[in-house]
Image (cartoon, rainbow, N blue to C red; front, side, top):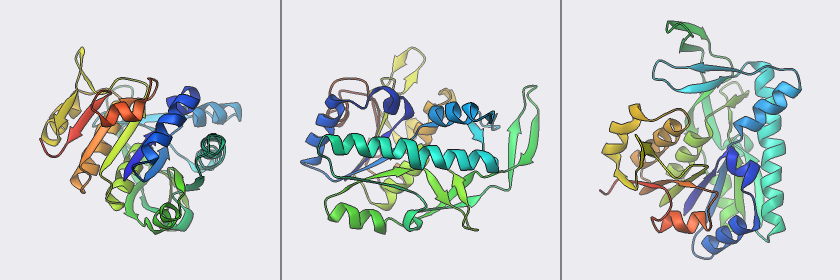
Length: 269
């Protein structure tokens, strides 16, 4: 089984016939679950609705959206509605039997709401703020995905989790994909993004070990750091390989699986 994480840049510019044909080729040999992002789309629509988006940075340098109650409603609407259904519609148009769902459906993804967040302000000072509606994934129940897969469907999952008080929570899409990959005992997880892989200095890395991924993590910039964290977490819970690859090239998934596109992170090196 393969978990395919489709980033927001691919949603906005890469959902085309070439990608659909490559995906269909993969489906001939493997089961597939798709997880999508779409943060830029959330930001754009939120601001059109008059809700300015705020981003915060953790002491580790991880940048994330501050999700208050109004923002989580917009996030849910855009992720589970607009983006999820656009991807499902695209897949159906190319003959792929897809079903869209969120982490709330069937209690697929349960998360613990973060009560407090430690952030670093623009002056470099640490501050503690209210946690809002951001969650840390604590449980994955993949039964609903197994039912769909066994009956020939391709699940398309949006990264919204069910909180302990049955509230909607924003969870990172890359880490959600990694946790789903572990729960489904997937062989591989592929992150399709808009760059050729993990870059260290001026060089894109072709293949690295799990240990090396941990070492280079502090040197990687915003955005890619979450994909590497998600890759590490997936490998730690049993996934064999994580591949961070460009989704805007010919046959991006096939190329990634052959080691020709992106960075392969493996627990076996």
